[in-house]
Image (cartoon, rainbow, N blue to C red):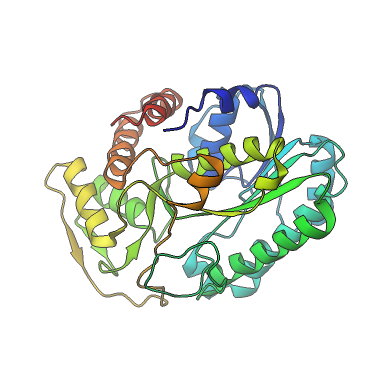
Length: 352
């Protein structure tokens, strides 16, 4: 298991731009970066009424700008102000359901938002390392997708992320090469404390538990590469660090969890186990747009062989940590300290 100590020291005093910093993954990433001593600049929509970002106290190390990734002038002005050395692009329209309801907005955000950012980054002299984050980009298959598989996500959300990947790869080749290195990392379905999004399994489980109702699943048979938020975030941080002095490592990489992928029903079952209090789940068909039934990632080869990065938690550990964070939130505890406690346990591969 790779030591994260040297990586963490790399970020001290680095100027880092995070797009989508008010989202679930973005808030966790900002917390990790600030604890490493980075100077963090965040560009994103204003946080949702109920959000991890809104629950946390942010110190002076975070400079935040609320704006739409589809506003190139505002985005460009903030990029110029930030003068980042490292960029993590997380801003996205992240929901399958919204992709069906608002496909044009989804493509504008996920594809053109990526293009607008990359165009702004062309003007940043000190920029060295960019990581563009995606998921669900592969064509539908029952096998575990490897990095060389065809990019052709099934639904508007997934397809827009496929398009964004192609655009990012093109900008990396044609406009950034020789000055800045750019990689694309493809994560699985991320879980963890502080995710309040609608139509996601664990947030739905948490809402049901708080309301003392059974968990309702639309597709318990669906299989996903579930992973704790620490897995992709540490992989993003690891990637940006490694390619800083080794541009030959720039590429696309899958980021999978430790162990086997599980079904939605199994995930809900793990939640009920760790939540306790007699929680149960039940299946009820719903009128919901079609998603891929099986989505798997082969994340055990390329990223480990080329970068030396390995996952630390399996799905059960991820669910256990999610429940632990949620119960701290429920009782009004210190969420920042809980995040630090979980980060320390993750680094050692220990259970929460």
